[in-house]
Amino acid sequence: ARLLDASELQRSLQWWLLLHGGFVAVALALFLMHLLLAIRLRDQVLSVYALYVLSLGVGYAAVKGVVALTLPSLTHHLNDWLVSFGTGLSFALIALLVMVIFETRTRHRWAHAFLWLLILLGLAAFASTGRALYPMFAEWLFLAGLPFLYVALALAWVRYRAGDPAGRLFLLAFSASGLGASISFLRILGFLPANPITQHSLQVSSFVHMIVMGLALSERVLAAEEKARHVLRNAEGQALELARRMTAELERSRQRLENTLERERRLRREQGDFIDTISHEYRTPLSVLMTNLDILRLRSAIDEQRFNIMSRALQRLGRIFNDAMHTHRMGHPPRVLSEPVDLAALLDRLLREFSEASPGCPVHRDIDRQVPPARVDRRMMELVLINLLENACKHRAVGAPDTGIDVHLGVQDECLTIRVGNAVAGVEMDRSMLMDRYVRGPVDPGTPGMGLGLYLVRRSVLDMGGAVELVEAGPERFVVSLQLPKANGE
Image (cartoon, rainbow, N blue to C red; front, top):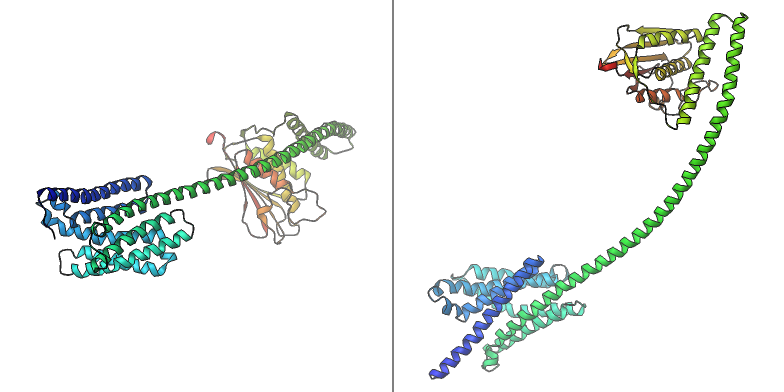
């Protein structure tokens, strides 16, 4: 102790206010700066550090009496809480910060357990403020505080040796704290003299620690940004390489497509030449057949019924051939010319012609004469029915109890329904594929046909807005059902 006159007391007070008030002001300024950075960067580490700096400033202001100068009427209510806030929470927050920045959970298990102990002691000291347990928790906390500084210093050294860009700054920050705490502790034990340097070593070291820690955390953010830029550059390089490979692949695909289109154009030219040639070659034998058929009739060398069968077959062949030639020359599929068609009358005529041409294949009719007209393409409908009848006759099981063909016409579920069925031998076959192109049922290999009948039936009915299905009628029956639209929505 020493005696001071008025002037010396004034100078001492001014120095005291400058030193301690300046420390509190710097702590609060650093708190605001790092809090704004944490909000801007959305970084939880900066948020924890900002709260740590705030706890240091508040605790220092309470211990050194700055609060008593600014809030004299509330000091006796607040000071104990502010001191415990500055001691307990500052230790807990800096321990949590060390956990995160040095990744102790995965890299340093021994230090991780010690840091958890320090966090629990800090929270217990803060929670016991104003109670009898506070001195005990505070004593344990300060006893663990000095080893903590050296643990943090060791972790910073390991990070520095690992080549972390921020490792050097972390090492400097915790070195300053460790030095200041050691000087202060040795002064308290009497190993160092009490002078302004030893008395204020902890404040100076804390000030240096806060400044350097802020720089270290900023360097950490910069390192994360540089890593993100490196990843972005790698991603851009990979994207460019991928784009280059895709461009090369697209070029190869374009070349293959051009070659395919050229082959297709060549095939279409050859097909056109073939169709033009066959058009000329077919018309001549058709004309010859019609002419000689007329001569045979005039000479009574052929009976009337046989003449009518052959004549209708030649006429149908001529219509099909003319339609095919017209479609080829127009360059598009045949158009569906829908019109109201009396299906009962159409079936009567086609069944009569079919019976004349195939007398050995009996037909069992079940035709509803009251069905409304269907809206279909007449010529396309004729081809559909002829294909169904010929297919049923070709594939029927000869020798079965019922070797004929069943034909039904009626109305079901607001649609016109035509069913054509026949008996088949009980053989295993995948019926679901019979409407695909070039698929035939189990017939004698010598039976003519290319497996296009049911395929053409399905395509034609779908083009007219109807539907086709194979009806489950047992392994010895084969039934094809057509659903056709009514004319004018009747």
